[in-house]
Length: 96
Image (tube, rainbow, N blue to C red; front, side, top):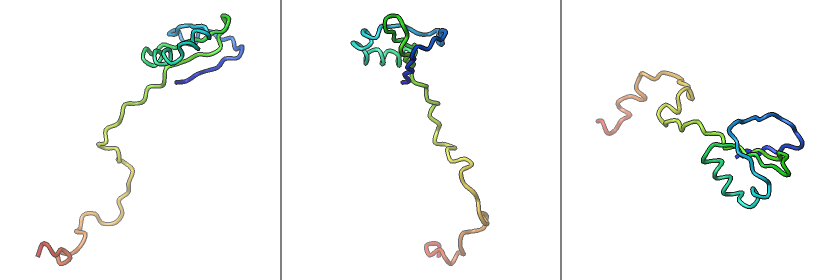
């Protein structure tokens, strides 16, 4: 949740998708309103005597969780010979 406090800053309507509420009504139902902003995605402009004092915006949506498949791509380096066996057949006791 991002809360932007505006101190006498006059700005146009930064987000057409917003509701407005007085600071006293916001204070009485703060938690309910924060959940509402998160669930609906609508911003909430908090005012005091008609002047905007805060703009509450929904949280930024996380990028979808990436699959674990391919998550280590391009994070390692190959060093040395990778095609030849790691050891001689004599090193493997279980094979004899």
